[in-house]
Amino acid sequence: MEITWWGHATCTVEDSGVRLLTDPVFARRLAHLRRRRGAPPPARAAVADAVLVSHLHADHLHLPSLARLAAGTKLLVPRGAVRAVPGLRRLARLDVVEVGPGDTEKVGPVTVRVVPALHDGRRMPVGPRRSPALGFVVDGRARTYFAGDTGLFDTMAEETGPVDVALLPVGGWGPGLGHHHLDASRAAEALRRLAPASAVPVHYGTYWPIGLDAVRPHEFHSPGDEFVRKAAVSAPDVRVHLLDHGQSVRPEVRR
Image (cartoon, rainbow, N blue to C red; front, side):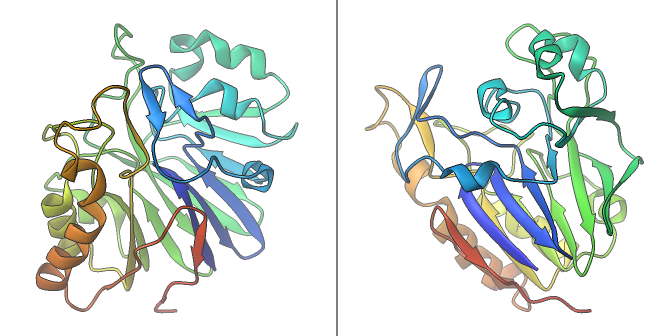
């Protein structure tokens, strides 16, 4: 199996001949955010058998990026998403499936299990609280946990179950993170609880607000390296792969 990080929370997970794409955002600019590091992903990044959308924030459910998917692509979105984001109805050529925690979906030989996340999953800034934030466990040759955007919660390891690879957010897109996010320290603690064989830090070092380049720049540049250092203390048996944008890795699995 292979993981490619395209930036922010966008990854391709290839397992058992199946390509899954997480939270695709291919834009150079997104509202008040601009891509400060890494070129936008190439066209091949939009090739997927299924797409996993963790929640309705525009930097995770990005309609122009979803419009680049091929007809018939399965799109898993949080329950209530079509009502909350009417633009999804214009993507009728996609196979849109609303899911919630506990649901499972087959994608070829791979099973995708939906798990909870601790995050405000509504469409911002005024969307109704009808859609949960989600994580996903991809069960194929490996078990790969994509956490989406989440804080640390007591039952995270129990809900997720045993995993081989963890794709964990370690930062954000602006100065300051609330407790419904993982920063490097909380992500390292999540890693200790989950105890996978390997991990890839995501959701950092890609987008930053226009005009705020000089405001707490360490929160843009350093979360990945900081996560590596803290993980070495909290979860020394886990191999952490710090990827550049567009870089791929074949992580260690236990099976």
